[in-house]
Length: 289
Image 1: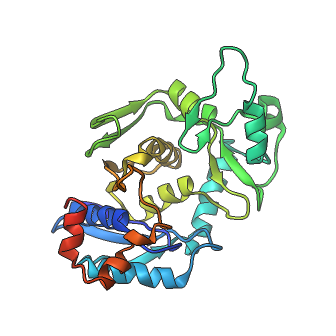
Image 2 (image 1 turned 120 degrees about the vertical axis):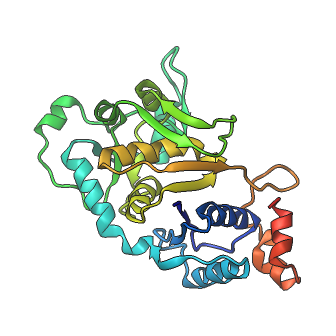
């Protein structure tokens, strides 16, 4: 039995790309499975209650139904804090005060023969704030209450060993089946990613792993643009003792210029199509389903 989920952020209207993602996740659950709805509203400044209602209305209009109760990330901060506490006590995360400009400056003049690598979140972090073994050994401080926290990828992969997941869809380069990533690649190509943002108490990478485990998600469907980020989910899952679900990466719905759709593109909002008289069957045809 597949347990799948659709996890939109209530920061704007759903568009054709969201319809594709939601329908794929719903259909992958199958007749005997469960399809869940998770509202990713950890960005309290941009998340609005009226967009939550709009999401529900659009999904129901598409003919989708989901198992109760819905999960709201804004209610999950204690769970994220507990996960961070576990990682902190094992020396796997550290506070980082670097701004985006600091990181860009540190990477602007790389050492000869040491090119800049780009990971899921942009340039791979150069390790400016990463504590030395001596500093770490003498540290006995509490988990910072309001600080950016990064994963020490070197220490993480030492504890995990082999990284792998099962791909049931197709990645951006045609990947399918059993996927593996070696420790050296995780360090060089992903690096010390942020697991808690300052003022937020978590990050997408931490929340998605913790929440998928809490909801018992067995099959994660997501866009192929998140294929590399899936490795971060797998790493966090392994470190926290979670079962790694199977993954189904799917193609993205793009505009006539090949650009992925965004919430600011109101012309392709589902509510607009509905107002113009489109049917759910019309939407499925537009997105190739």
